[in-house]
Length: 314
Image (tube, rainbow, N blue to C red; front, side, top):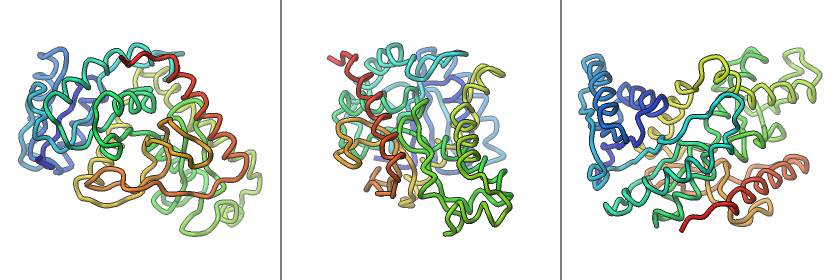
């Protein structure tokens, strides 16, 4: 297995933007692009490769599923795009069908690296990939709420006038309409969020939290309404997840992971903060939630479970 080799399955907006971000990162020495439309993969590989003289030397090319054999990371972005007015869960039947074609192709090449699912609805598709691939649970990761959490930090940064890197807060649960902003455990460099807000002259905590959480939740819909797709933000999230894996950073990221009893939730995949490194997900981080957040997380899991129950994976 070559941790300096990645394969991107799907060369749409998200896939190509992610490869562009990864090209600039210097993480990989080669990236193979796979798409149902071979010419699309070739065109994207050619276009992105022309930026290599401005970055690190590497090889970017259109490949096929044989390229996954020795890859360290396979990233799956392939799927139908979310349309204006459509929820991520509305995509489920179309994209499960696509996943049922892709994952067996990967499995048949004896791939034993990290499988990173980015296509939506990411929590459902990560569960599907886990069941179809036969890979160890810790090697199948969904991009989850890494982007949502970045959006939350961005909004809090704007609200508080402080660097977003100093803000420690998570969006958890579904990457979608039932996601939860875990404000009760949020802090700014160790100072509880509400205390820091008051230090900056903000006292309407509940109203501000509701408004910020709603803006984060609506972000994708607003972007899709204006430009029909979101891809730059998620490309940066993909780059960050790959950094953590390749460099074995053991960083804490809110990725899609299987639940086994924590917070009373079983047998679904959703986002919780996890320690992520070269071997994938090492452990879930048990952040403290208040009763309201715990109930919302359980409700989010219930929505995902009901969707999973409608699927036929055989």
